[in-house]
Length: 633
Image (cartoon, rainbow, N blue to C red):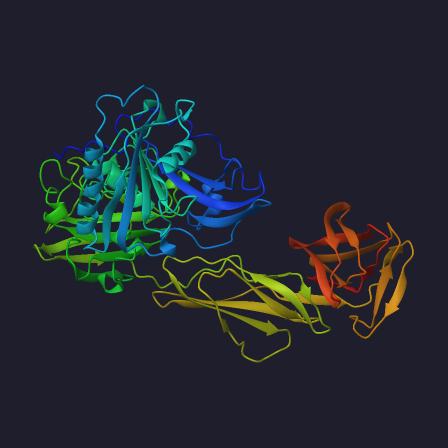
């Protein structure tokens, strides 16, 4: 039986003090600053996302609110949204090349350096070990040089509750070290005697930090497994986990693979981003670093037999990706050579073909979303890999290793035939958007949903006008788009169509419901207060109803699912309140230094048609006008 390795990443960990406070929402404060992601490698990893704005206290936000934004990016927090203002992270400079590390050891609780702590020479040796590992793991593409190791220095206590204030530690370390550099390949390692209350042995920025450099905090641990793991986080890598799968939702019997799986944190004993001190990086992580050529990875969408080269090889096919619903399975081949020399001994997970998967439907903490999970094909013996002659089948697919040698493994991957076109749901549907109106066109946003077992490789949008017999003309879209700003023809029926193609070649065309666009150029409903008719050819219908009377109002009732108010904007115009069904929903400022007529200045939409009333109230003695109304049904 394989003996599991003890992870030094979380060794000696207890509770995660000071890291589990509920994050503020993105709209809790308005600020422009640098977004910084950190991961604390505790038994349950904790990711924090904060925005550092000068001397202000960092604003903590939910990681999901900043999904897709790299650490080190300048952002703006306003009204519950996080908007990037610049690119950031190490990727902005390029990960390959020589990285420079500065090591700063500090202490504060004793009068002198506590006994049992590593010397500066030993810390330098630990940092130099990074180069040996990453040089071998990336075939020389990533090298590490030690810029300097400062002398041990006593600092003011950074204690915070049972743990430490990592910002205070970083500030103190940078006062000691001086300039670190912001090339995207500069790292600061802050080492301090263990504070057991923190609950983590290592913590790192997931990419660049607040000053453009990358930071690691080492809580009494300088082993390669810890420092190399945190360095991986600096490069933007997340965790390699294990999977504990069961035969049903009640978790009665453990099985190799099912749809009832738990994430087992760090339980990937092949990868340094899991629990192994050495070992080649997974093909997934090599790909994330841009170090796996496109020729070395193949995506399979039908039953195939392939020959996988070992991950340790410098050429050949080293990864097969199999999409199945919300999961993608990643196959690679491990042999007991080089950094993987120990995988086949009694402490190792075993040589052979291994399978990881990424599950985008995980109902688990955000930290695990998008991370890999390693499949254990023999749960009883804890053997992970499939050797020559071994196979597994289930979930409508199978993996069978036909042959294996030191140079490659021949694997047959069986998949169910996919003959179903992508599903478009919700179907394409238009809602009004702000913009310029004419007598013939109105600005709208067409929205839709899309899903498929496989990747979408083609996406197109077309419109059909009521009464037209012409074939629709499709416009190519980006495959990730789920909405497009277009125009609709006024006073006609407009129907939008989506054509979607998946990577297998299945294509389908889905039509939305016909939408009638009604443009009312001279609405004459209920006006209260002093209004008059202003005439000009630039107005939508040759005239606009205007008022300068404060609290003068215009009220219109229509049956619709999307309504819009059309007005003129110029430097003489003021503000108006908009009420929908008696409730104030917006204040619209019609001021503009240069005059623009026929502007759709306000819109409101609903999921289905209904009877709604819009009321426009002048808030000052400046001019407010109603040039027209538009609504969809």
